[in-house]
Length: 231
Image 1: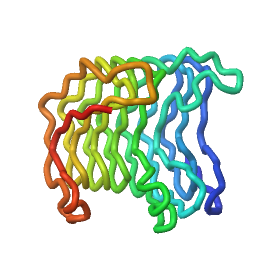
Image 2 (image 1 turned 180 degrees about the vertical axis):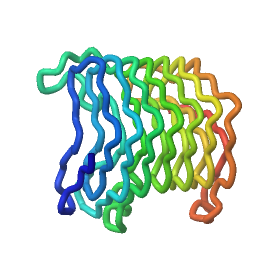
Image 3 (image 1 turned 60 degrees about the vertical axis):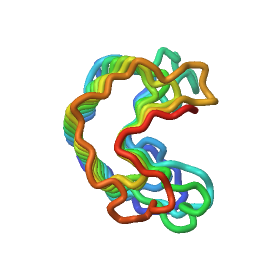
Image 4 (image 1 turned 90 degrees about the horizontal axis):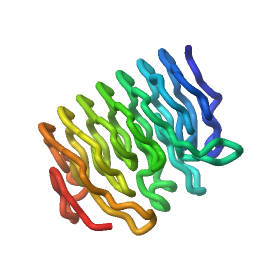
């Protein structure tokens, strides 16, 4: 299935959104041409199933109002608009391709590179994020969740970070991932001042990080392969 939209910058539209569903399947979709959609594939408070084989690409914004473009995201609105608030659990996110989620100069100057390939929300747990290919986004995979496995993903050309664990992300495992040509750094683990949960007990093993800051956009900053920071 191809999901496209006549482009209007600043229009907030989520092309695919599920709430309080069980045993979901979102597969084989081609999504492009959207602006300011926080999650192009959006899942709240769902249990079981898979998001696989989708291609999300060529979405951009240069709007002056804060928004974010994320390829696949869970639980950004958990518990809102009548949803149960149970969080999303045991979803497999595998074999998706996410690329070219970008912002223009006006947006960049105001808010920075607010685009993510995949975002696991604070309420989520037990996600398996595996075998995805993500390129040319602000950040590759952001994890705020519990008890997730991030395995065998290829992340390239992200302006900030390839993999990021923060806002209380805990008891997650990241292994066999390849992070190439990210700007600030490859893999970041950080605390938070906005959540009542620490970022702890994450296992980061057998990943490959290469080519940090190859474009020299961050020569004035401290760049890294893997970093652990306070909130």
